[in-house]
Length: 124
Image 1 (cartoon, rainbow, N blue to C red):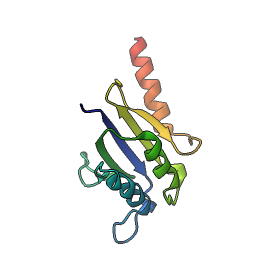
Image 2 (image 1 turned 135 degrees about the horizontal axis):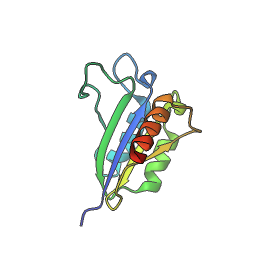
Image 3 (image 1 turned 90 degrees about the vertical axis):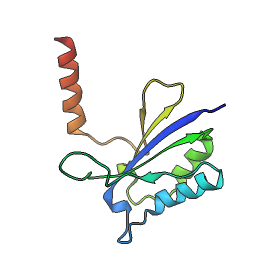
Image 4 (image 1 turned 180 degrees about the vertical axis):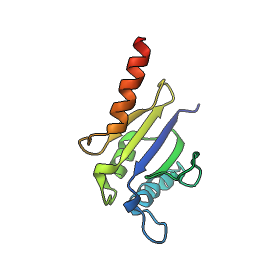
């Protein structure tokens, strides 16, 4: 039987080096691959719109992901800027993805504005 966990990780552009290597993600991928789970794929270059993302985006769908071990790999990854890391997670039985941050959240004016627009529209 399958139990799928969807993971999306966004991080600062500064997390990558000139050779398009991402040490923190490579650290996580070493854990995932050693546990037979595959790896997070770099999704930049597949965005829509007329511009490129202003963050690095990685994602994957993992069968029987061991969350405790995954969390340990994320926590021990060599992040350059952990304040700019966002993880979205959805377990198979969940209805939606939820956001997990590595540090205290910074103010996000775009999210604040969109939330207000969505709530106001809903109340009309």
